[in-house]
Length: 374
Image (cartoon, rainbow, N blue to C red; front, top):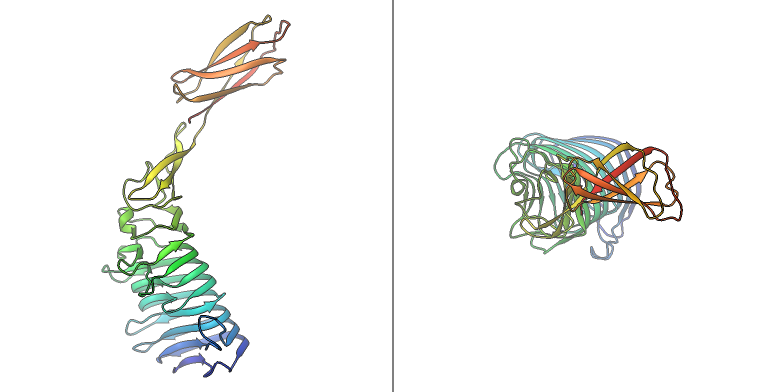
């Protein structure tokens, strides 16, 4: 396969291992700017590929032809740091397939990128860490197919067309794929052109199992269904700016079990957020994390004879009948018991009760009150 640099043994018995490329600078109009293409000793299902332990310290590749891309396939333990730019006709940036334990950092720049990074189109990429930064793409920033047990991090931005451009696209390529234990932590904010932050190709969808979309920027989209299309079960959404923060529980979009939305305008007495307990559109949501209401006041308890008690009140703004209240006192209670309850809106009553056999006269102190809501 003609290109700038090819590492491509012709037969399975020709092994390449422990290869280190410190610096590489390629300008290529060929079919590939930089190809690493192994072969299976037995078959791809076994994964006994004949290229192992390849390290690329720093590669800069400029694609100038009418076609061409970087293509890495059938490699075990590949570590690479690469910057790709493309000129001329639109072309793919980096295509990886049948890789085991890759650790890749890629910066991919247009203006002539169609798909920035394509992963697992015909095989599997497993046990991976891929950090990618894609800018100026005309179709997909990332197209993710056969992947399992790994993490994507980075950013996709700068779609060059407003028609059918998706920052991240998943699809099965007709293989009925299930992505398992994959974490997506890719910033995909609306850039003024891209149609979706994430799209699972309708009619050729992958399924997800134990996957997460987390810790990323997905701001700027008009609604959740605009940001995410066909997001099926098995992928949980956590800490996504622009998506998992709101002032009410979600009312549109498809959500999955365990998805969490934080209250972005919490006030004393409000809940911290909502969690999806049954998937659906929009699913069933329960509140969690009530923001406690607290106050304190000085108090000098009266002298209490055996069996006697005294009740006082502390103002707690936001407290409502039915809330749970608890109280503490800064001094030694000497056997006196405290009982706290919400007696009216914004008011908590505290009962000091002497259950001992002697008269008790406590010194003055501070009464602290906390209110929570079931």
